[in-house]
Length: 422
View 1 (tube, rainbow, N blue to C red):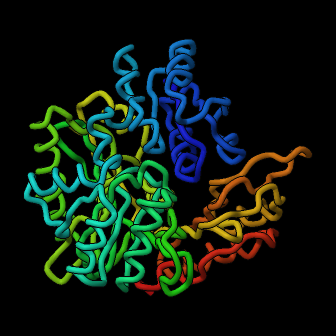
View 2: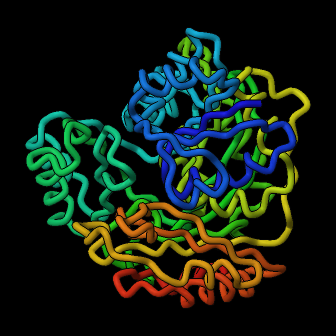
View 3: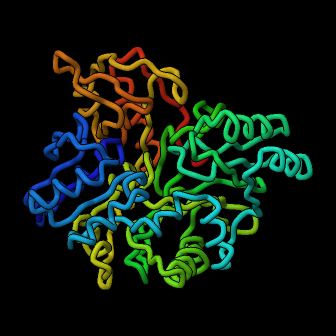
C-alpha cells in the first residue's frame, strides 16, 4: 500500500515509524517531513497546508491512503478534497474538523450531546468579555475561539491575568484571526488527561490515555505550551473512567455530529479534567496529540496501518488494537525562549548516543539539515525523547538519560515529567 503522511513534527515522526513497520506498506512518503522522519519515509517538499499540492502529489503517485497528522490541513478541507477524487484520508472532513477549529462549536456540540463540560460563554466584543470576567471573578479560563497551535488558552488565576488575556487575544491578536472571538469558561479543578478514540463516522474504538504537561516550567509553572512531555497510561484514568467517557462523551458526540450531517472519521482526542464529580471535557482535537502520540506509539503492539485505513473507509468493525502494559514517557527538548521567540540553526549533537540508551527513542519535532548536513534546531519544540520500561520510574530514568546524552546547550526541558504519578 502506498501512503502519504502529512506533517513534519514529532507526532508525524512517531506515526511514520509505526506505519513503516506495517507489512501492508509498499511506499511511504511524508510531506514535508523532517530529518528524523527521513529514516522511515521519503520526504517531499510540500507544505502540510498546501491542500492542492498534496492532492496533486497523491494522484500522480497512486497514493492509496493519506494520513493527516496536524489539524490545519483538515480544517482546510484535505479530507474533502481526497474524497472527491476517491482517495481514502485518515482524518475528518472540514465540517467535522470544526470540533478543533472552533471552541464555541465544540461547546455547542457538547451541550447538545449532553456531555459533561465547563459552563461557558462566547464573546466577539472585548468590552463585553471584560464585563463578564468581572462578574464571574477568578480563577477563570480564556480561550481563543479558533486554531492557535495549542497556545490560545490562558488559565487566569487573577482577574488581571484574565483581562490581559482578552487584550492579547482579541485586541493585539497575538494568535491572529483565531482571536477574533473568545470562549470564557469556568475553571475546572482536578488532573488533566488525554483520551483517544478511533472513529469511523458512526462507531468508535477506544485507544489509550495519556497525561500531557502543558506548562513550560517544572511544577506546572509558566505559560502554556504545545506540550512539554507526556506519559501513558496515567494512573488517575481508570478503566471505569474509560467506559464512562465512551458512553457519556464519545458515543453521544458521534451521534450529534451525524445528526448535524458532519460524521466524524479519524481520531478523536478528548481533553479531560478529572474532577471530583467525574471526567469533564475541556476540549476536542481532531488528530493525535503531540507529544501524546509519541507515548501511544511506544506502547502500541498492533499494526497501525490497517486501523487507519479502516477508519478512513468508514468501517471499524472487527478492529481492535493491542497495547503494551509497559508505560511510556516522552520529554520534549525545546529551544531556549520557547514558547516565545527562539534561536534557530543551532547544531544538535549526541543524537546517536541518546538513541542508544536502552528503551529510548528520539523523535524529531523541529529539526532541519544545516548547510553542512548536520541536524540543527528549526523550531520551538525540537525533540521528543521517549522511553518505555516495565515501570514508569524506569521509563522516566531512561528518557532523562537519553536527554542528558544530547549535546545541545541551546535546548532545555522540564525535569519533572510524570511527577503526579511518581
